[in-house]
Image (cartoon, rainbow over all chains, first blue to last red; front, side, top):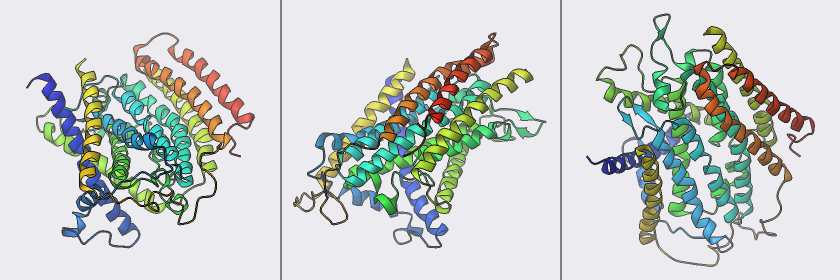
Length: 334
Length: 117
């Protein structure tokens, strides 16, 4: 296969993965939240309601999507691109298995954070362009929240980069091979880096606008936040990228802290890992997403001033201290 | 080089996908404009005053602090990659750098910049 064709095929596969994730995750969210609320969730379309989201996609495609007359037309049209495209680009750095990576980017980790950092801009653009008070408040809250929590998110993974000596996701997975005491996998979450994982988890919840940090959408206050005035497929794309972001962050958590595609007890070089690896990584990612949904069904929403105070006064100092402590410990041990 | 081509391909495919999806949707959807439909949504009542007003100064302070800390983390990433290579004083250097940044955060905190009003 010519190199250009192979690149195109990889990009198409990533797009398929993203779309499949969107369909599966929306169904999963509605089912999981339903059961957490002691309801049934979707159960009419197809077996156990499994075709519900596919039908929803058809519905979104055939709905009129209009631009409110008060909106800034061009920014309103541009916002779905600004939200969707970076979220899709983040897939380029994912490492699914020993022989399954969309690219071999050396700076994979930094690249993912760099492209995801563009999403708040699109969200703010959507909120501003809509020219509606709900949307504007939603957009501003999302921007304040995502920039505040981006710093602790970036800092909380630095100790992993220090111990792995690389920003490439493939190298970070490799650094987690082997066993401590002969049987405990050397996953970062089973080492003192569990502290980093805690910081990462809290920052990630805020970065994804997930409960208890879902002020930007706060259904009971802002209807649908920044996406209020959007309809039809434009709305669909905004939401698809939201689900895709939770997949990306969850996959990052699995890669950085839970050994990526590694399976305890199976030699990473064995040929079986070529197909088992991606399956295991997807499983770990979906477990992570399930935990996100569980949190969403359990915790109440906090106030915006509490959210900003937690980010700046607790998470950033804590992650800076943890960064220095890791440095000192690593030096003392080696 | 090939890896950066992948990134370019993802960018192009992402844009093409959005254009294609919105295009297909445009062909499938009804187009029945009405004045009511195009009005700003505010739970059925007429909006009072424009939403494009000056907003909370608090956002601006956080944005400034964010720029400072984001640049700091960009400096920290290459340092973290080089950390394992036993460069003399690498830990001391970063301690000094972080102390300066930390002092900045402490000052902002003391001056009340981190307080939401």
